[in-house]
Amino acid sequence: MPQHVRSKWKKTSAIKADPYLRRLVPRTSPLNRSSLLRMLERYGMAYAKPNVGTHGKGVMKAEHKRGRFRFQSGRKLRSFGSFEPMAGALLAKTRGKSYLVQQGIRLLKYKGRVYDLRIMAQMNHRGTWETTGMIGRIAAPGKIVTNYHGGGRLVSVGRLLDGHMGRSAKAAIVRQLAKIGVLAGRAMRRRFAGVREVGVDVGLDRSRKPWIIEVNTLPDPYIFRKLPDPSVFKRIRKYQKAYGRK
Image (cartoon, rainbow, N blue to C red; front, side):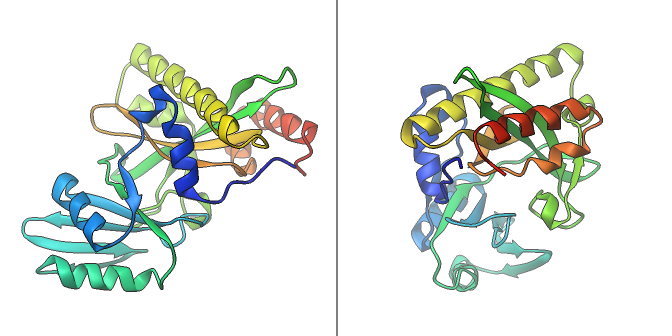
């Protein structure tokens, strides 16, 4: 069974060791009042997320906009006139659990809803890393997370990119995403010897720059069954079965 790394902080540190990937990782810190304020002062938006967690559960978005501070949890949005009461309410939602605060990225949208891209990379039978699948995830209406288990919608990467760029630009982005998958897999395995697959969540900002939002070491293969090409899922499962993931 491949190694499962649960700590988002440890995974972020691992991929930041790669020079190419480091510039694609949003600024991330342990969450407290000071780190949250710094993020909002610098970027105007930040995400608070559990250090250990799955399916986007517990993720919150904070913003400082037009003199107001607000944060969203699920579909509920709360607004405050100053930072301190907002920070207190947000921190209370963490229930004392270890959280991280991450630089907010203004992501591209599809029909008014944010989306990101899941990049699957795996070790093949030759012991080298290979990007084996890509799929787009669109957030459910009114939600801040794109996870399929949270109501998100799965579509092909090409369909999402078609609305933002031409054929050659799209091909270049897909090549870059494939490179990110391979480099993330290598970086994780250098730090954690038992890692054999990664699911890299990548968001594109309004300048088309990719940002690595998160890396998963036990990614769900079944979302790739939603792609029109069945060979993608078959190849992913073939590799998983080869290294013992049931």
